[in-house]
Amino acid sequence: MSFDVAGYFDKDYCGKLKRLREKVNWEDKLEREEFYWQLYPLISEWKGQLPNLRDIFWPTEIDWLLTYSLMWSRSEVLIRFVAQTGYKDEPEINRYGVPQLYRTTPVHYMPDCYISDSIIDVLFEIYDKFDVNYTDDDGLTHFIVACKLGCDDVVKKFLELGQNPNCLEPHRTWTSWFVLMHFKTEFEARWLMKNGSINLWSAYESKPLTFHNVHIFRSTAITFCETINGMYQPAQIEVMWNLRQTPLHLALLRGNKNMIELLLRSGADPNLSGEDGWTPLHRICMKYDYEDSLDLFFKINDELNQPVQVDVRDELGRTPLQYAVVNLAPGLIEFLLDRGADLAYFVFPTQSHFDEYEQFFDLFENQWCMLKLERASRAMSVVECLEKRGYELNRRDALMIVKLFAKYLCKIRSREFLLRWGLEFFLELTYHQLPNKCCQKIIKNLINEDLLSICLAADVVAN
Image (cartoon, rainbow, N blue to C red; front, side, top):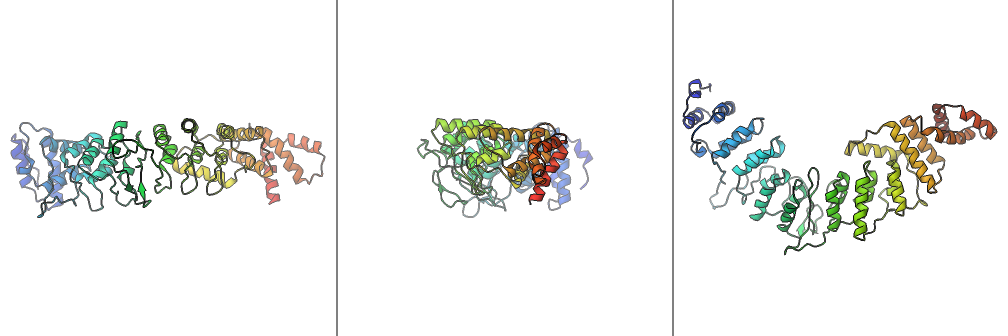
């Protein structure tokens, strides 16, 4: 198929479009693609009456053109043109008079394409039969696509026409409620909850749910649980997803204050742990930027007279206070101790616990970029905070701090600590054969690197 130079200057736009189409062998992929690119100059300068596309193309051909256009940055031109012609997709009716639901449309490709919100809306104007929920070969439906892309109005229309909000997302163990992530207003979330059944079944939990979770990743989504008659009831927010976290855990991890507040006020259990034993407080204590979440979490629970367990242990026997120490967060430690955290049974974290913490933030938060000096400085503040509250560092604890200094190469705040413990370990290495005052003079004249070496050597000898 060659480019029609004479036809390009033909001002009978409808006639030219028909002639272009007639020259295409639609079974030939290359001819289809060449035809697609010839459409652009024609569509861009179109004047006069718009065509009835059904007089020129089969519906499957329009599906292909729209789908192919999604692959390119100029997709907006063709998609808007099709919508402006008034073209509306119509379902194919089988011999029993029932619409064929198993069919792949351009809508199914939208989640994997970089297109603007306005183009998403335009495609849903073309594929606007919301009583027909088309399903592709992978089980993805138009309704799930609307949920994923945050098309609130489209989701409403589906629900108004009887769509089951509890339909499963393909290859997942949660329902469509779990992919509704982009609600823009509280009204929309409340409206959607009205249209959901209260006692739905979760494929993950295999039990009735009385709360439908909306996971938060980008927008300020809000979730509520309503009774059938529209009156609110306390929500039982116990659904886990495949990262073994509850909705409240996710909201705290993401620092979404609106979601944290609404989940707690909707009945979320502030002490509910995931399968790993982590409670919401464990999650907070793992965060570098914990302040806002911590204050809000306790403020709301205080208002609701909901006690928060501060000494609860996870699967590995670790308490929130231990995570706060690993986080090197003296302010958080002070807060937990003020809230009743028990130092009597506190065990200083191990090296592996500190290493796990760094890996966790490396993978999940991308916030592991504190300066080495700041990290070591915070370590000294943690020691001072614990000792001020009556905790006595033992030999193992001191070595743990020394290793942190060795790792972060601090030469300022560590000096006092290293002098103190360097003397202790030097006496140990010399088997206390030298007078204490003599050892003090020796230690005082050593540089930090030498003091570190003494501390680490004592650990090697002891092991």
